[in-house]
Image (cartoon, rainbow, N blue to C red):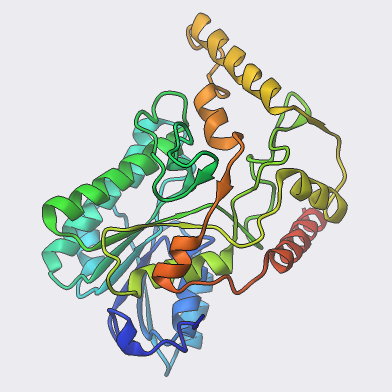
Length: 360
């Protein structure tokens, strides 16, 4: 499959000099997306970040792009309609990676993911220069219940209809964000694509996904067992996101992002212990973990919320139910392929985890 550099410019909806906006540009994926676009020959980038964000890496990219590109770093708040108008002026493609991740309350998550997205889309539509709005979502939106294809989770699977019941604030906000983007596409003619990465890993996001297990009460409970873990290495993920904003003929579509040769939960946990650090874990078979979540849910209801329903049947289905994952649509519709193998990606990831532990 072709790389973006090898793909003829006529195969993209935006040219090298068209203005591209990246929100959340200082984040784990955002900064790498900026670098990827520059490496791919796109020379006119606007990077939007919060005033409190560390912009050192973006400024370094600005300096390295001198003479070859124009990288503008713009700070502001997407809750401000004026800042959104400034950010979207003259923009052809928007990669919307900014989202509220640390908020634990549903209102805060809604404000910083949904209201900000609405403000950005309103501004972009009024500018009348937009060719594509890429909304970066998450696998967390899937309910993983009553799937039409058994254990296969792909883009046809249902998302949570009531994420406020049993799911966390991040899931709730991402579901509502996807809904408002789709609504603007239908009502306002917004040209959009939704990208839903699995667990994005690599240097800068060290640790273990909760899909493998959780640490609680001083124990690490291994809940994934033989489940596939929907990993995507950060460089592979930003490559998919970049193509989603540039390939013609995919408006209104959803793309899941996972890599090839996904490891099982058991294999990933074993490799982590071998390459990063050893610790004791206890495996809970799926039937046991389901009963644990059911019991926790019922006790939370009985105690009227004195014990928060952190573990419940909806969360079990979304996180620990046995599933398989597909990147077929991503490959066939966007021409994507993972440039970093899972073996190499995990090697880099484990090395970063060790270095973080040594420097802590």
